[in-house]
Image (tube, rainbow, N blue to C red; front, side):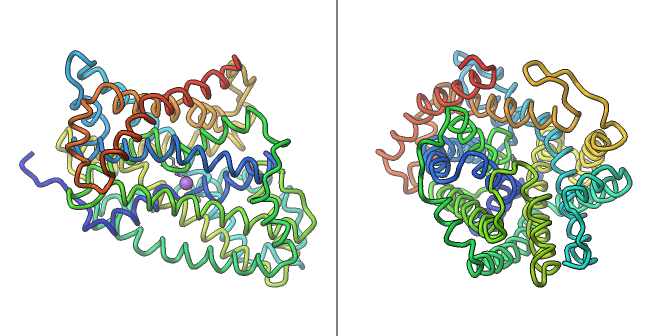
Length: 456
Ligand code: PHE
Ligand code: NA
């Protein structure tokens, strides 16, 4: 109270931090493997349409709700609708964001830890031709070791806590300014390498030549869901980041930039990974193991494989870290803003809680590997897989539905226009945006939910 709320230093700092949040495991790990599973080009095309029609409008919505309310998700959701249109009840979605953030980070950090573990393996020469390790088994052995996975989860959460304690411009923005340029250089280096292999032509063809016979309803719905995950939507991250945005910055322009960069990076990661995969005569559709199993076994057979592997896992680790930071900030911002708790205390408390919950995911590939939860419609799943399923398939999309209906129907459009009229969007652009939020996004989201329930 009385203290001035923190802000980004300017549009550039905001864009870097938001791109840091958006670009993560979703781009470098998940997008390539789901594209591989769904047969390439046609899926990529559908994904691009989903980003434009659903992802981008929701990204603008979250940023606008944040900057308009100058509040974290609980405040942003409970302060903008009149009592007749739900008033404070919308705050439910704010709470949901915070609970989702805590749970998502608890296992995102474990996977972030795996990337650090693989970085250490690479540096110590585990991916050289001489070591000839069967990497399929190597991954199984790695996650079966509770001490290693615990150690790397601890390092990953520790790094997130260290950055978030530093604050908005002094911690989060500064970390993004260091990590994102290195990430870009690493990615372009690996892309350059991949393009010189003889798998490059096939990779480009696979990614950009659409074969619609390979497209299924499931693939389309997965594309909608992934367009949320990849843009960090449905969890309040872009509300919080938008709330630190100064009025002079354009939501329209920075939102476009964030979506363009996130998309470009996913496409580049796909071309890079598939180039390497095809050059070794391997299949693209190996699923979640693409990055931790298929790729390492290929690195092992390349000249200077350890070096390429080290660069790749460093890149993946940096991408995961700037996303992890943003997830932690959602929870911390609530306590700082609404409860007036000191940032350092709030970060230590929340970071510690998330670390502790993450122990369940650490143990779910070893000590608790046999402990299965009977998930309706899915069968018995480990704790890790259960969390992933509920968050990726339910929490993010339900929260996205909340954002679309709240911004499209509950908040007065005049208020939104007041916030955006000097933003370069124009009246027509604004009307298109409102239309997409009122109709297109809710219909797309309800279709995904029905599909998840296996009703369609
Ligand atoms: N956008 C991140 C990625 O692509 C994941 C993420 C989701 C981060 C939701 C924050 C919130 O990996
Ligand atoms: Na992303």
